[in-house]
Length: 410
Image (tube, rainbow, N blue to C red):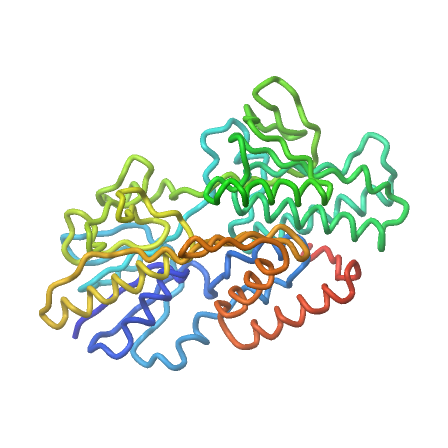
């Protein structure tokens, strides 16, 4: 019996799993968590717009209608391509005939001193919850002890989609929270500073959309610093290249994603940036039965540039790799992967977003915001999650400023 092992239950891994349904093979799905996280909405968890359960969906629930798919919780530690088996951190060995590596990505700190130790990221559910707790802990401390020798400044590093979305959500949260629940605090003390090294925000979008995003963020009180490089991050703030130190109790790193350094230890061909090197059909270079997809793969577009580490490339590569495996099982030849750019979106805040769709169509304002809402609702896993998110979004829109501000956990 043919054995297919998929490592990673993100967009790419789940897409591959779905595409493999109906083939004469046993599929094993492995992930370090027993749930799939909808990462595009993690910043809303971090700013109390959504609950943790809204963006997490149990993997085993998805498998109820996939009779030949089994799930195993574990962390990949090694790949033995000669023996056709992988090793997990717990010592287990799992054999395969075809292997799909959909390991995802991690936060990229670009070697900035102190960034990893002192900044908070929002790439996992735990990280998003940590940011959420710190924000409200800051408010509670200031409300209880006063503002002497304390500030509510939050620094967001990175002017891409993650940084823009986070900065906009933080600015609106602080405006609402201080007005409704913390009237003793001065709203002007709750600064949100967005730092970007390039000369404009959202570099992947057209200049006109970048200009719109800048204007909308500034109208919401975000202090945007363009052409500003971060020299180092300390436990008391961010040091800029010109020597200025921005005093801050909370620094969020949204400057980009990369590949976990552990990927290099797997013994597979990889590029200088750490991504696994793949051929045109997404097979790992030098391995006939191993595929790499999603954020961890060095997949290129038609012009030879690396695909961005976003949801659509992950979904499309996962589906194509599964199609290649089906072809190989049936004794057919594989085909080259061709990426279909469906566009990209980023939300800035209430009734403000940007969208650049295939064909050159550009949207801003309420139209882009509604399109963003609809797309994310459609792509969420599970009917309950979709209904819960819709209910939360509707309540936040109607009540505006009266959402839950709870510090979760210990």
